Amino acid sequence: MNVIASRLAAAAERRRATDMGRNDLVLNGLDLASNDYLGLSQHPIVRAAAIDATQCYGTSARASRLVTGTTGAHHRLEAALAERLRHPACVTFSSGYLANIAAVTTLAGPDTLIVSDAHNHASLIDACRLTKASLAVVTHNDPTAVETALADREQAEALVIVESVYSVLGDAADLPRLLQLCARYDALLLVDEAHGIGVAGVEEHSGMGAAADLAEHRDRLVVTATLSKSLGSQGGALLGSELIRDAAVNTARSFIFDTGLAPANAAAAHAALGLITRDRVASMAAARAELATALEVPIPAGAVLSVPMPTPESGVRVRALLRKEGILVGCFRPPSVPDGITRVRPTARAGLNPDELAYACERIRAITDACVSAAAG
Image (cartoon, rainbow, N blue to C red; front, side, top):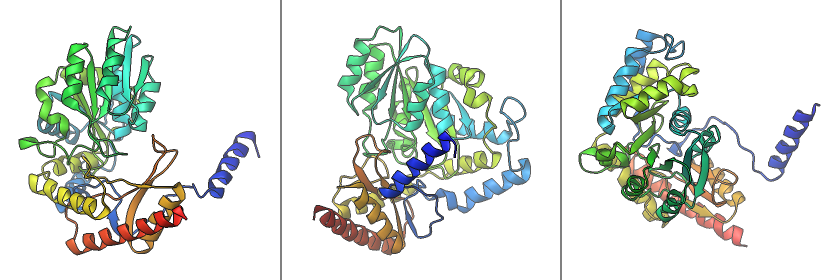
């Protein structure tokens, strides 16, 4: 066995010994674990759009968007996203991960200070590492820490990076306050709306994300979004000015050197965008409130609830016991969580059967309580 294989084998053995291994099993049951917050991945209109696009364009974009990989499906989706999310321009990518890579590497230069929230997604962390910018990681959801970093900077430029709704704690960024700081200190705000689209937004922008309510600040605001959560498809998007779109198309390696988003995914996301209604968002919110009440946890800003567990083993056991009863929930545990706390994570979504949801609430509460008690000895 070569030295690299030996290292990988030793790491695998440590995971087995501590029951910290991960797998990609095919699972069946009541889905309270996926990111299909509005249930649109199975909607007949969304499925039909994907089928029609496959019949028209084939199964793949076949090339980079700059070669022959751009289709009408891409441009129609980008125009619709720009309109609904209230930005001048949009460009799509084959994943949300790559959209974040493109956004950060396009916007941050050698004389930029990146101010990044400590709970930002791994894709944003990796994106920062790919730049030549300076980096300040600030305390989670702390505008005062952001202001200190901006005020003390030596760099000519500054880019503040946050998520509108954070996936771990389910809390929301104070976007109005952050935009005030960006205006005061001549910075740009990049907001990842992965968990905000289909969930956040008020008035006529319900479900269009928290940043859609702040479009009047678009000179300071850039947004990324995923197509794989509330939009029930796959892919990612970067929204901002025409200048930013042009810069990404011409300089972002994750756009230039990647095969384009599959046309079927573009068409599916476009169809799903038209199905985000207040009623559908309200259905998700009602399920979220019922789960939060049953589990005695705060109602999150997003669709994912977090139930803290005393140990990683207790969280894994809750997930396994619920799976045996036909209920699928997530479990986040170290090293994948920024604060080292294991959490069982049920996800609310629109269109759940009321009886199934009530049963799931009862079983999740009973099993988590039992596992917490067992861990306490």
